[in-house]
Length: 264
Length: 261
Image (tube, rainbow over all chains, first blue to last red; front, side, top):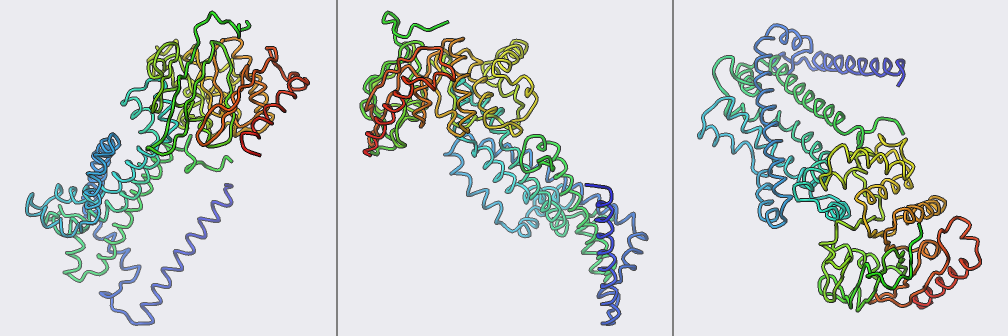
């Protein structure tokens, strides 16, 4: 892509953003909305600057919970998927439970965790971990067992051990599927961290995450701060998503079709 | 080096004794097949789809169990003989995350050959199949013919005495297919392995083989055996011989007879 086109695209994006902000402002003018119903973009920008330390600390807490939960779910999820890939019998027996993991409402689990282990970062991380686990297990298992029959036969012909088939064939083959799982999980890990924070977050000043701050801002009718928090949560999700996409590119671009960049 | 094709003193390489095979208790795919392949022979199996050609190859490789009968490879069971056998599949079965040279080295790696020996062998094999320049490429960057060369190099890396080939050139254009046929015969002349080759192409079967077996379907059985007495080495010129054309015509007629046309 040429420099000119990059600049043009950037200009387009900025123009669209400015237009949206202007529309927002217009809505407030036309309908005479009070600041506690819909604050102006300017008021939100101001509150971000004014309360930056508190906002940053909430953001960081939620990032740690979401990131920690996501990492743990990758480690545990891949291990479980590897186990599932070893036997059809095991898979058929245990797969319904992973579906259960996906369908159980996290809002119902969070209070339980609160009761069992008390509020705090650990409980919130655990909520994020639970919510991330299902897509990691499901996608990785599919990738591990979806290996072409001939490939397995090829390994068998050369007297490969089960371990060799797993490490040299199934795992690399599952990598694209694993990254699809991580991409899905990266988005919901932030949701998990914030939902978890609503119930099980630490209420100690300066230790709560975005979820706790959102409850607080709502109670105090600080709508402008509430918007700033929602904005921060969105940014966090964005950041996670693009970090995963970048990692995926690093790992897969030289061989996998899905991430080839314009060289054909 | 030429291989003595009719040396009766040699122990047969592969023996199939009255084998039958069906999947899941259904009607048999292969019924009462008997076949003896001599050492150094190039035997092709042709036949309509559903005649069990590929299944036969998998049985000899020990990749699927027999219902009844017996198979011996070098006097051993197929599973025990695996170290001396290589299988070449219809698709090149390359690992897309490995470079060409890593793919060629896979079989040696699985058999835990030391790194430096592996590298030496891989370099020699790449030269043998004319792919030195593509050693660092990934499979997605290769043409179908090149992928198949990689697959052949990998199969030869473990110095097999028996090669099982399941329609390896079926997906290639005619020019690549002809050229790879010639190269396969050159490699065979150098290394002297025995080959059992499954194909849909009558011309390919006649060009390569010392013997062509025509299989009939439902259930799969050997309908006819045709000796191909064209002298080796065979080259591109072999295809313009009258004797070659006659054998292609004869084999084609036999195959159509089996089809019931």
